[in-house]
Length: 210
Image (cartoon, rainbow, N blue to C red; front, side, top):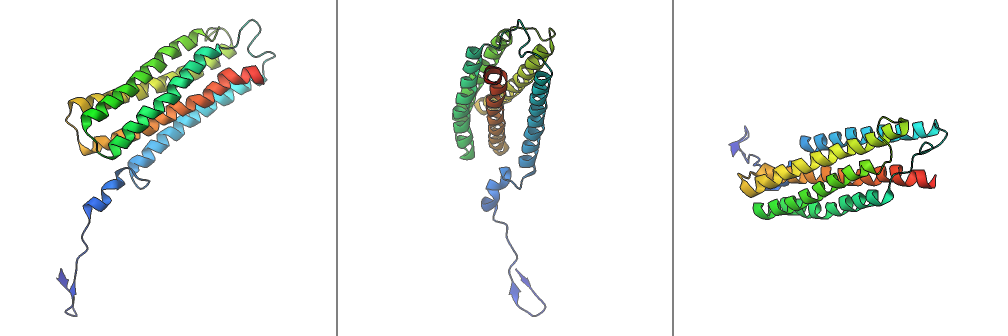
């Protein structure tokens, strides 16, 4: 407290730390903006690839080129299912992180997500074979392989980051900030999984229905 010139007692403002504890990953935090900015840049990269795909398509007489089959839709649907379903365990892990749940439990759930990521990566390698053309055979092969490869890199990055957090939760030492890291990682995982819904539509459905 302090006494002002008029002699009245004036209370000093006191910061209520618990009341502000939840602002670490809010729309006010720089890390929130950084995470969104990264996803915005990467979404723009995907958009450029998609625009290039349709530009090459419009400039071609046949799509895919004569003698090249459309990509195998079965293997593509399998990876689509894996990535979409993987959102569920990651969402659960993020909820546990928001509650500062026991680190070991969080670690196990994150490792479950890693298994989904590894499965998606393995199936992606099979998808490359299902394109029915090499990356350097024609413009069609180049753009299809590019889209698959760029998204493949995102799968690997998200999986490795999740693996790192999972091991950290299991072995420690665990700090308060690591719970926020898990929620950030979860949002990026959603981005990687859901972006494949759009890319799958472009690569597998569009050539069959347009």
